[in-house]
Amino acid sequence: MAEKIRIEELVLNEDQLNQAGVFAIGLVDMPAHETDFVYMSKNKAKKNYFAMASEEKYMIYGPAIIPDKKILQYDENGNEYYMYFSKETTNKLAQNYLKNFSQKSFTFQHNEYLDGATLVEQWIIEDESNDKSNALGFNLPKGTWMMGIKVDNVEVWEKVKNETVKGLSIEAYMTSKIIENSLSKEERIIKELRKIAKENN
Image 1: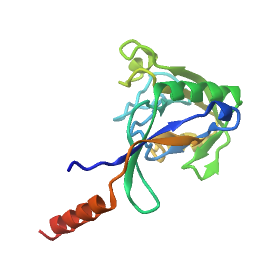
Image 2 (image 1 turned 60 degrees about the vertical axis):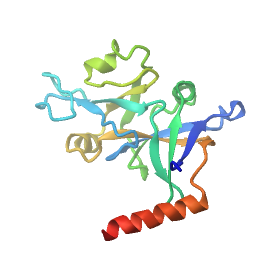
Image 3 (image 1 turned 30 degrees about the vertical axis):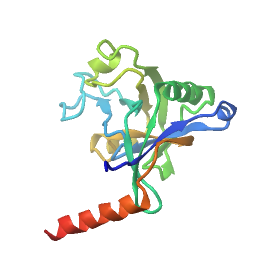
């Protein structure tokens, strides 16, 4: 029997639009969607980064949400499952982030709020082959929520340049619905036995 891993879609209920959604964006070292941001500076280009031969711009560009991308998570019992956002939900979250005046709501590693970072650009990719994101070096699907962030804090900018932080990660209040069921108890036992046998070989 093929293994079934739980898949959950993160959604916003219509009656939650004013109370739920993205309330902050984390600057993190390991973004869940596995796509690093790029920064604009006069420095020589590094791998995964985009540089301009001009004065430092103190700008970060990157995806906040890549729709339909399955993101690996672990529940309280250590079982794997995946979650994702639809294009429709991603678009609602992007609109609500501005409607709720959250342009300055940023954290470092989801632990502490940051001063000196402001969302000054955002857009949803409509044409993945002809979008500003292409010029920035990204190859992302239609519906991706892109951000352009101005950094006015020297300490934060140093974290960007020395790669202490590499990407964007949302912080949100959401509801989830199960799309596919998790493994049954028997299937989990078989999976664990196979794992143990493989480790002992």
